[in-house]
Length: 57
Figure (tube, rainbow, N blue to C red):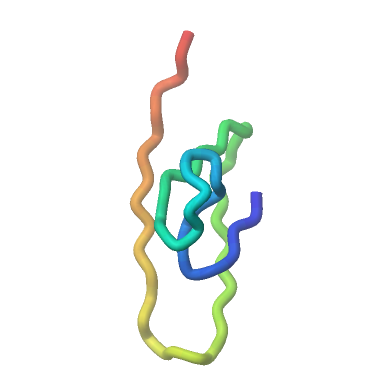
């Protein structure tokens, strides 16, 4: 899954790409987040909140 832009939204929950919405990935691990930035703004950083849900049996 590839997500680009200023908002985190894969349209699986809501197709309003101007807002952040949950992104759900059910593929097998590992969970890797590659990040690429540019030099437009220095030192801003980012924050990722995640929740691992238990598997349904």
